[in-house]
Every structure is written in C-alpha cells, then in structure tokens.
Length: 203
Image (cartoon, rainbow, N blue to C red; front, side, top):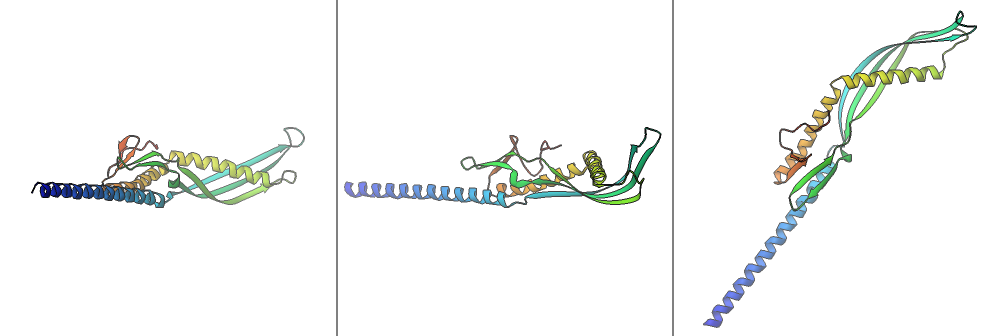
C-alpha cells in the first residue's frame, strides 16, 4: 500500500512539474509573440505625419548698379507674388525605442525633429531692367533664397508646428491602444503615455 501511495505521489508530482513547465513555456511564447507583434506594428506605423499650410508672400526686388559713380545707375526691379504650400512632417521611422519583454514595456527614447518643407510657386510681375543691368540667374536665385527665409519665419510664427505636434500625439496613440490591449505599458520621458498625453517637449 505504501509503495502504491509513494508511486501515486511521484506520478502526481511529475504531472504538476510537467504542467508547470508547459505553462511557463507557453507564457514565454505568448510574451515573445506579443513583443514581435508590437515591434512589427511600430515599424509599420505611418512614417510621416504631415500638416499642410498655405502662405502668400508679395516680394519687391530691386537692384541698382553704379555706372559712373552714384549719379548714374542701372536699375532693375520686379514684383514677385509667391504662393507656397508648406508641410511639417515627422519621420516616425526614426523613432528610437526599446522593448522590454520582461517588464512588458515599450519605451520611446527619442522622437525626431519636425521637418519643414516649402513648395513655393513664383509669379513675376512688373519686371523692368536697364540695358546695362539685365536680369540673370543670380537674381532669380537671390529672390528664391530671400523668399524662402521669409516664409520660414512665417512658419515659425504660425500654429503650423503645433498642429503637427497634435497629429504626432494622435499617431502615438496608436502605440498606446496596441500596448494597452496587450497589457503592456508605453513610456516616453519617464512618463506613462495614456489616452491623454503629456506635452512631449516638442514646442
């Protein structure tokens, strides 16, 4: 009877140990699958978040060259109307993040700076030039350079970048929805990103 009882206990212990090992292996498999899924989803998220705005600029260009001292000059001038499409984008493929499988945490380490792109359309009016001071490629390049600098100042003073930041937060919310559904935690700058996001330091 003792032998039967000892044998039964050994068999029961073996079953429990086997089941425990099997469950632990299954948990590790699920954890690894979740981790791979999270990493794949982050890779597949939209690479660019774009906010678009339109700006107009009226630019007066004038250039004078002295011919025989300051009394005689050769002048050229132009009125330039510029309509520009401006985009602010974040390349999310450049997000630096790490996945901690043990702690079930996705930690965003850094976010790329926004990229501002200008697509100006130039229309030239009232172009006039003296014979000895004609328009050339250098004049057009100077106009484009000056207009671009002026437009960038307008973009900085506008709400375009803040709108792009809001779009960025919306995109990061996809990370939150994904990680939360798997009971993972999404962290940025030491804070847990929840449905209502902290300011991300992108002002």
